[in-house]
Length: 101
Image (tube, rainbow, N blue to C red):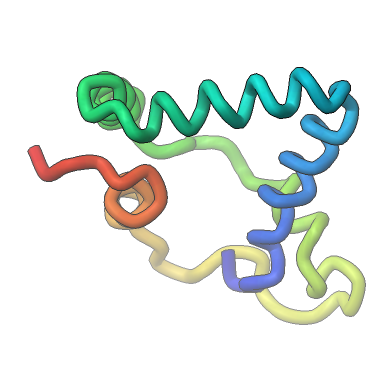
């Protein structure tokens, strides 16, 4: 995304989804997610699956609509010459914390 503020769409989506749940379900989800992240074997399975499916191939309209450029009408939507493979590796390494192959 050329507009860095467009990344807020992920947070907005999470708030919308979790915000519609009762508190006990949110707590259960958070507990389950924390357990999964802290379990190296589960992380390995998740990382293997994510590497298998590869980077997204859709146009990220939902993100573009949440960036400031959508309101100001300025700037490019996507980064020119963006490498989806490198971006996916960055997500796996820094956000999901996948171990190296």
